[in-house]
Image 1 (tube, rainbow, N blue to C red):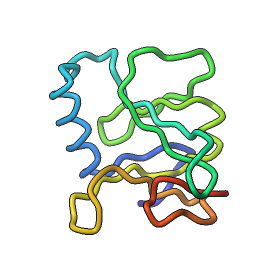
Image 2: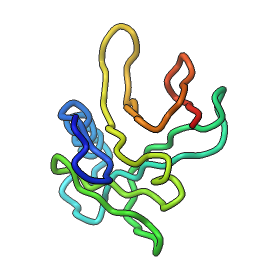
Image 3: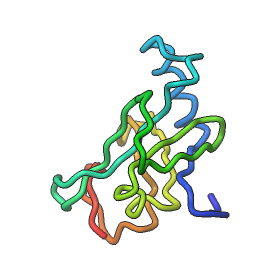
Image 4: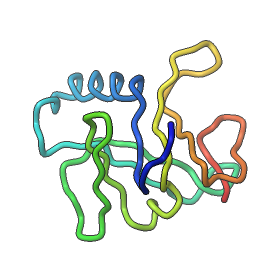
Length: 116
């Protein structure tokens, strides 16, 4: 991935899994739904990632679209997530979404929390 602008990016594997989960949740095809990403305090490294489906854009939200997936984050979280790529792994070393975050100075072994 080469960052061309300040955004949040979605890999092909993450797109495929997100679409599958949206279909299972019954929201695929409803253009009001999107992927909400965020950062919250907690985890063994200080900050944790948050990922969910949502259909309400708040006034200070940052809205992006990459690889056909609409991604929304609050402004505070975006400061930590700028130029991050959302990816998905289904390998033996761990299954699930993960964030390739160029802003993280360190992350924990589980990959669910980080520090800047």
